[in-house]
Length: 358
Image (cartoon, rainbow, N blue to C red; front, side, top):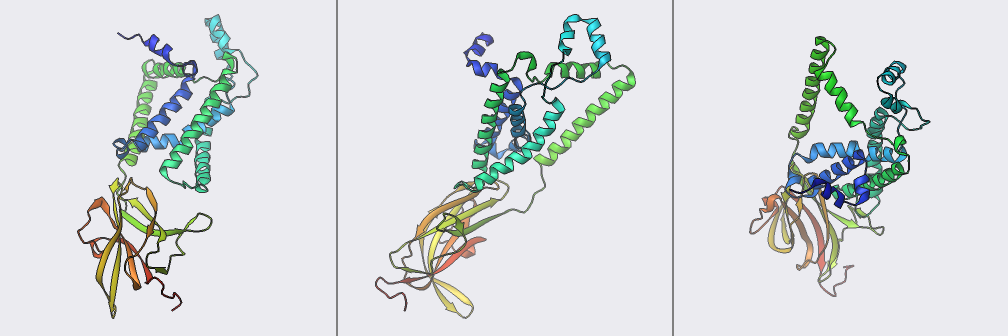
C-alpha cells in the first residue's frame, strides 16, 4: 500500500505549505479550465456552476488574501472568554488579542464577491485593446493568470507573518459548531428550526442550480459576416475592394458567430458567381469555389479568419459569396438558397492592362 505521507513529501515544500483556502482557489481554477478547454467536458453543464463560482468569487478572494494576509480581530465576548478561561487554560491563549489590521471572514466573503465583479470586467477591458479581443479563451487565460499571481503574493505575505497572526479559515470550528447545532440542540424547537433551515438552504441551492443548468431555450442562430483591417489593425465593416484586376488578390476577414447553444462544426464555402439581371431577378450563370473553411465553435464563441480572395471571372458585378453551413452539411453545388446564412460582395474584375478609370 502506498504511504500517503511519502507521496505528500514528494511535493515541493511551497506546495505543502500553501494555505488550505488558497489551495482550494487553485483547485477551482484548475477545474474551470478543464471544464472550458477539454473537448468532451466543455459540452456538459458542469462548466456553468464552476464558471460562476470562479468568475464571481475566486479573483476577488485571492486579491483580498494578498492585501490582507493577517487575521482580523476575534469577536469580543467577555462571557465566552471568561468561561473558556475557567474551563481550559490552554484554550485561553486562543483569545489573546493582537493589534491586527486584518478583516474577518464575513468581510472577506463580501469583498471577494464585490472585487470579483470589478476585476473580471477590467481584465476584459484590457483584452479589448489587444489582438486577442474579448473571447472565451483569452479571458480564461487572463483571469487564470491574475488568480495565480495573486495566490503567489498572498501565500508569500502570509508566510512572512508569525504563525499566530496569519489568517486561517476555521474549518474545524465551523464543523463543530454546525454539528452541535444540528445534533445537540438546546431544545427540540431549536432542533426543528435547524432542520427546517437546512432544508430551506438545500431547496434554494437546488432551485438556483436547476435554473442555471437547465435554462430556457433562447433563440438559436448563427451568423457570418465579412470585415477588413484598417491602418491601425482594427477590424471594420468598411473599405471593401470595389474593383480588382484579374490575378490580383484582396484581403478579407470572414467572421462566424455561434449562438446555437451547442458546439457546432461549421463549413464556410467561398464562391464567385457570374450573374445575369432580368428585371428584379438575378440568375447565376456560372460559379466557382474559391476557398473552404471548417471552424468548430462552442456556444457564444466567435471565429475570425483573414484570407485572400482572387476572382477568376472577369467583368462587372462579379459576386463573391460566403456561405455558412452549420454541422458541415454542404451540397455538391452550394448556393444562397441552400443556407439561411450568407454574405456577399460585388466586385468589378478588370482584365489585366484594362484602364480602371474606364
